[in-house]
Image 1: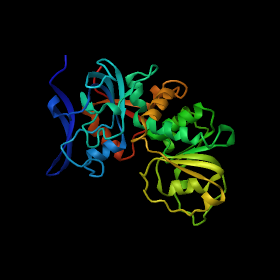
Image 2: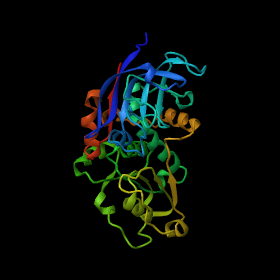
Image 3: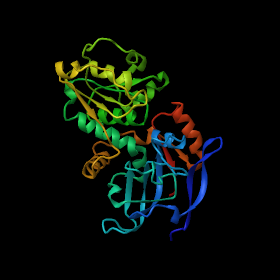
Image 4: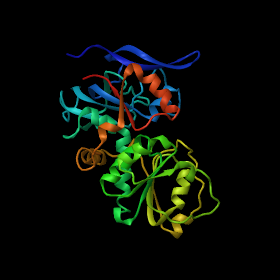
Length: 331
């Protein structure tokens, strides 16, 4: 039986700023989309933290329920593609940005946002992966088309974060030598447990160099932070190598010449997991459920409840979180 009312974490703009709290909502408050899903788990991502903070580049209108990831079971569907009881996962698109998101008991979304949850993944595991896992998988997928494990080491920036930690684990599982770039010395044991072969202090890549090229050290890189770190990773990549780019937490600016591209043939690969085509999503989710599934997946997450979201968001914005934070909504 579907309840007409449900719990949701709602962010409202108040006199002293943006405030998120648990509220009771009705199904009529949800958008009139194709498929109603009972949410089991969501996860906390940087975009969610920005939405809760009132970032209009992420969320235009408030009150709003964030949560760019969700997994659960179909309750009702206007489409013949899905039936009640089907296990599904939703990541990206507009979920949790301007469409009510996964920090609630229910979501209602367009049918073409849904991916059938593959055999081999529980709801909990799907959200440990979530957008971060899809982004990491897309990064590895594109990188692997240019660089093989025998070509040399791969650097991963922001390695203790959600995307970085999962990229490290997937690359290591596929036989790549992984050099984890991190500014958190206390996380060295964690990164080594994911499969990293060595740690590079982030400070080594944070100083801008006037040189257009640096000595080639990496066959490729997965960058999650942008800015000077990305610029240096490109300059340090060997001939015919490739660097993926999926984040801008350090900076959205890229100060670099064309020389790495025209003298070494470096490929800079943009990663857009938010609008990734459905066929590619299904391919990557199936790989994440099988041959790419990190061996220590359950060990890289922290599980919280909806009532603990505010504290976790503060920690994320302060850079204190590692790995993945998942939100248990319902069994």
